[in-house]
Image 1 (cartoon, rainbow, N blue to C red):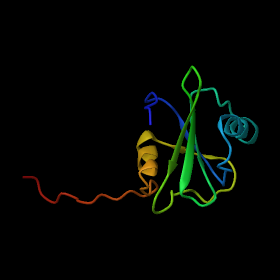
Image 2 (cartoon, rainbow, N blue to C red):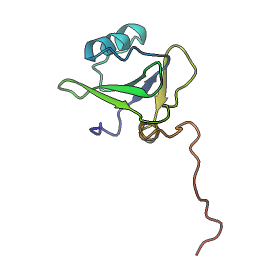
Image 3 (cartoon, rainbow, N blue to C red):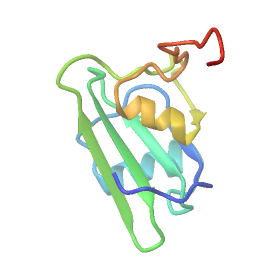
Image 4 (tube, helix red, strand yellow):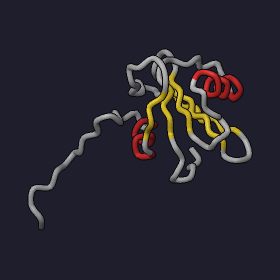
Length: 115
């Protein structure tokens, strides 16, 4: 995925989205259901019913970009809310795209002593 600027706001669109929608259909969801502009430079992340596919919609200043990912095993972690959005940090988006539970990441090792 192409890296958006560090200051880009990232929104997880809660609920289920029809993954047959393309650029225009997803932009309409952002505009009508979320009352936001799809052309403001934010990232909008959508998940399908099965939970193994996501689409990310982003206006890069010249046109809409659409990133689509399907997990071979497992599901993307998604909030239970039916309407609205959840704001993510760039680190949380990276974890989400890797199939990691972005809500409660745990460290694999905690140092106990220095040197």
